[in-house]
Length: 309
Image (cartoon, rainbow, N blue to C red; front, side, top):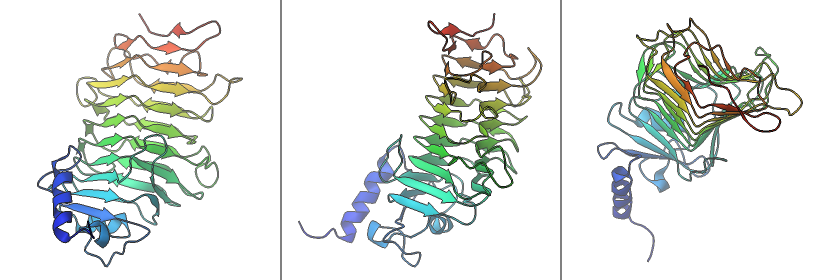
């Protein structure tokens, strides 16, 4: 059949643009840390950039550009800051062991302060001792519609340096975030809070089908601060997740922490989640007593329902 021509590549881009992961109006950029170069055009596999940062620089905000990333480890020295409405997707998607790993001995690997970014099949992994959190969302401005699917948030058991409690996975604490979707992801080896939510809440979010592997008693799966129930914090759904403590001999690990005043803060639904090797109060404190439905904690002799009345 011979070598693919440039026309073949245009057809391939058109196919990608028609898929649900890409916008038909956006441009597809390619990153290959093994064979690429930031001096390339970046618009075809044989013209791939070497770094994700180069693809972000080339992209046009709000157009719906996509970045396809070749398998490999991408070590960065400054946090990635995507443009609005960009999609980042591993070329080969493996939800439990991603083919693309973004790493760095820096405080934060990814800052998301724009609307509509998607991250699919990518590992965010700490390296060295300076990591504080892997992903920071809405640190400086309100953000709408951020998606993480089939990703891994890997703290690499970093317990030294300035952050003695370990690395946090995802922090959503600066400004309001509306429409956050975290689906089929793994949070592991973090030590700190795996998903931290600030006072502005995660309105209309869906946190579903994830594994929160809690590694230290000081670690927490999801920590939700005092969210305004009928202002910015309403409408979230946390469902069908598994929370696993780190030891069969210790049950001090906490799955979900809720802060605030009962009946006043944090209006949402927490349902059908399962907690193994977690504290007896796997969901604390109970400020949404009408919204905690059919959650279970593992116990000797069988599971125990932990819902409030």
